[in-house]
Image 1 (cartoon, one colour):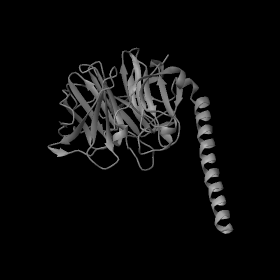
Image 2 (image 1 turned 120 degrees about the vertical axis):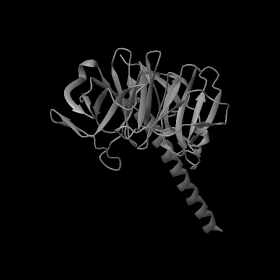
Image 3 (image 1 turned 90 degrees about the horizontal axis):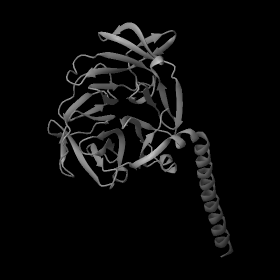
Image 4 (image 1 turned 180 degrees about the vertical axis):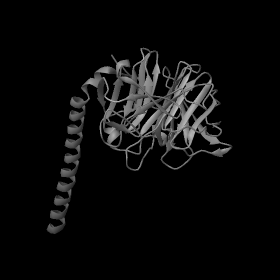
Length: 313
């Protein structure tokens, strides 16, 4: 009896120690985040919740649907079921979802980027191409047919639209995700690009941007400033800000058009891990994170469950 009692005491002491360690680690993480990301927390405001997180969505793409007055997110599913687009009204937080099909078949793509422009939706899916399809949203729970991919000269990890132009780019980390649009300028070497198109001609680019590694999103503000969303794994996210002076027109050609080199940014804003696709609404940068989904534990420790506006000045 004494042995059993001693064993139980040791067992509960171990459990208590483990719980205490986890709690203190969580407090330390929150403290680290509050100190490290002070600038981001001061700049950002919550617009609405990030939809689909409780349904097993791993969110990748984000856009504002001007006609429907809702945010759309795109992502793949943790249970292996078809990829989805979610819609959320920021005023009522009413949520709808749509399963994706391609040529009538369930679509299981990564859905890295999503944009609404001119009555159409544009979906960037890693490595397969850029999809363009009707922006009219069906009833909740119905399917959206995205059609066939349009081939572009990069691995289509994200997409952005503004001023009648479409921008789609790729993610490179020189490891498991390798791109081969190699370009160097004044000693700085890049392997990834963003290609710019007129929305009515996705066959021929207008301009190529040479970009660095681990880029998840691209946006252009109303004053011409470019913002890149950079993240990978547990490392802090970084918003790389390029004012026009840092957007270097090189005079050199790639894929038949001039290359604009994005090297050293004007400034950098550091944020919690796993920032993803970007959009601009009412002149303000909009973003969300992948880390808040059920696939990851650490993201939930930051309570990063929302869609945010981030002030860039």
